[in-house]
Length: 68
Ligand SMILES: [Zn+2]
Image (tube, helix red, strand yellow):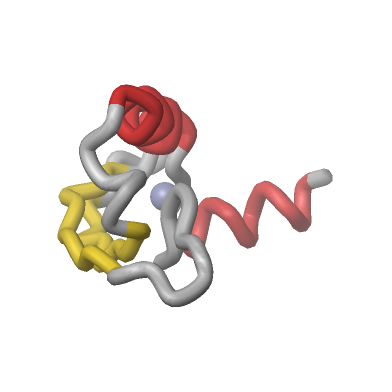
């Protein structure tokens, strides 16, 4: 999954997140990638928090889409 900013020709950092669905609480391993300059900046951590807070697994995301 692409995360944050990746500039053209920038080195890509790959990292893993332990994600938890905010609806069914299922744990999902997340293979993420981002740009070297963006990785572990203040903005990166802020966005990561936000991302974790709103994360839904594939099943719940589909369900939400159908409900709407
Ligand atoms: Zn879920």
